[in-house]
Image 1 (cartoon, rainbow, N blue to C red):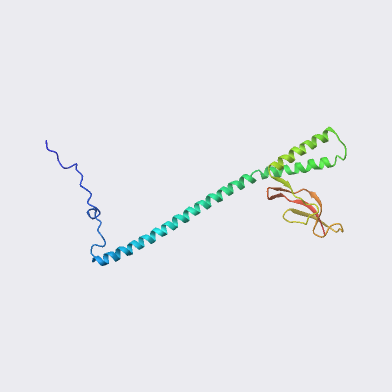
Image 2: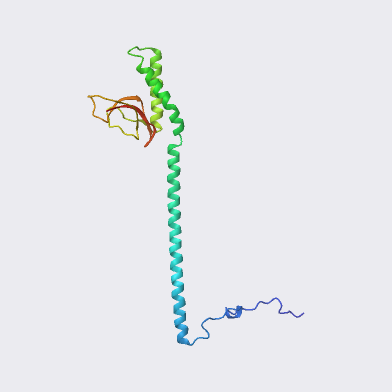
Length: 183
């Protein structure tokens, strides 16, 4: 039984056998070298451009990751701000109730003081802090002026009285202090 050559593969004959021709083959040897050098320089330039593009894309990716990490951390840091803002009037009301109790000591008052300490501890642990307002220069970012009053006790522009406490969540004002300002 004779074997046919139908299943045998032809050896790879290079680019010329695959329909690609040498672009330098019709040039004299001196011009071939010059043309090859020009093409080599053009390829190097394209490679440098591609490297630059790749480095820029990599830097953009690093910056994007950094920004998204910062955004995520910021969102986590302030995510409970709405709930905490709703608790602030409760804290103010408890403070007011304790201040109106006078010097009377009772089980009810002790209970209110305990609730006040726990609520204050909760707010502190979440990054909420009272804004110092009494006796400081009026700051429109932190204070809301309800009234201007003439006085000799404070210089003009200073806070005389705090009507409602103000609060910050970390570095953001979540409730400005309502104040009376010296004129």
